[in-house]
Image 1 (cartoon, rainbow, N blue to C red):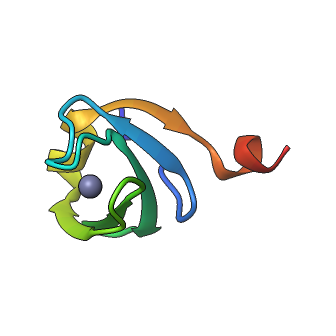
Image 2: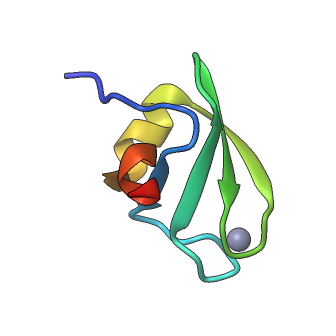
Length: 66
Ligand SMILES: [Zn+2]
């Protein structure tokens, strides 16, 4: 079942970034995703299947704003 992931969504990953943060913002979707670490602002490219496997939780953009 493919996940619904959109630009602006926040994802919690199973593995933390070297800076200690686990939350990332989706900047670009497609075959490859670009995500930004919310701890150190570093941007990372990941193939979609790899990202999907690492996701623990998705917070939709709409939920963030309300
Ligand atoms: Zn980081």
